[in-house]
Length: 493
Image 1 (tube, rainbow, N blue to C red):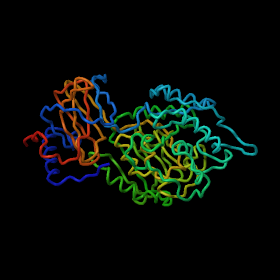
Image 2: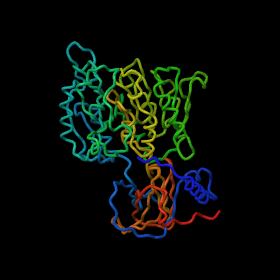
Image 3: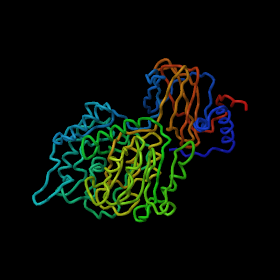
C-alpha cells in the first residue's frame, strides 16, 4: 500500500498539465482528468518482470470485444470462487445452479454436500445453526474438494447461518466466519461481549486471500426464497464495472449506543471521499435533520451505514447495483429473527450485500464493518465479498450475505474510431503506471503513455491513433518521475 505525498513543484506541474488537457471539455469530463498522464515517444520495452494481472475486454461502439487490456489485478477472479451446495436443500440447489450459470463458475468449483438443514434435536423447537462437530465434518469435506486455486467460498443455502452447540444454543461463530477462518475452540463459547479473534485480512491489499493468508472469505447467497436470492444476484450482475459516482450515506442516529461506535470513522470517510474526482458522500446527523434518524426518498444509494435496531424507510430509497448497506445492532445476522431487523431486509430493498452479527456482540466497532476500509477496498476494485470481509477487524460473530462477486469499480475500456479510452478507479496513489500496446499477447510492447494519481480517484486515459489487439497497464515505480524519463511537454496554455 502506498500513501505518498507529492512535492509542491510536482503538484504545480500536475495542475498545469491538467488545465492543458481539459481545455474545451465539460466540467464533469475535466474532473476525470485529475491525473498525471504523459504521452511518451514510441519506446519498445525489453523483457520485464511479470506482474499479477487480470483481463479487461476492450469494447467497440456496439459493445463487441475488439481488444484485450491487461491491468494489475484488483480482485478475486470468478474462476477462483467455489460454490457450496446442500443437495438436500432445494433452494440451495436452485440458487447454486443459477449462480453458476450467470457467473460462469467452473463445474470443478461446485462443491456438493448433503446434510439436514432443518435438523432439530429432541425437546427443541427451532434451529438456525449447525453443531460444531457436524460443521467440522462438512468443512473437512469442503477443504478436501477445494483446489489451491480456490480463493473464496459462496454458501448457496440460507440455513444454517451460525455455528450452534446442539444445533440450538448459539456460539460466537457465524457460518461464513467458520468457513473463512475455521473455529477456534477457545472462542467458541467464550464471553460473547469480549474480544474475538482479529483477522489478519483486515484492511489488506490482498487479492488472493488463500494464497496470502490461508483463508477463504465466505458470503451467503441467502434469502427468504430462491426468487429473492436471484433478484440479489441480478442486481450484482448489473454492477459489473459500472464505475458509478455513488451516493454514500453514513448516519448518526438518536440511538447513540448503536451509532456511536462508528461515528468518527463515518466522519473521516465522508471527509476523505466526498470530492468531485471521488464519490458523493454525506454524513447524516439526526440532531441536524429535525431529529430524523433515517434516510428516506434518496436515489442511487451505493453505501448506507447506520446504527439502529430497525431501519425505517428502506423501501422509500433506490439502490445502485452493487450497493452495500448494514446497521450496527445485536442480531442483524439472525436472518430469520423478528425483534431486530435482519440483514435480509437490506437485500429485499435492493441492496446487493450486507452484514449482521448472529449473537450479541456488544457495541464494539471492531465487530462491525469500518466504513473507511469498506469504501476504499470497494473503490479500488475489490468484490463485495473482499471489501466487506476486509472491513471487519473481529468478524467471527458476523455473517456476510449478498452477491459476493458484485464489483462496480475497477477498470473498463473502449476502442472506438481508433481512440483507446480507459476509465479506472484502481490506480494506487504515488505510483507510475505505463500503458503499452502490442500486436500479440507476447509482444513486442510499445509504451504509449504513463499515468499517475495523487490519491484514490477516477481516472480517464485517452490515447488516439494507437489501435492494437492487446494492451497492458503496469506499475513502473513511484513518482516524482526520474529526470531521465522521456516526458512530453504539457500543452501550451
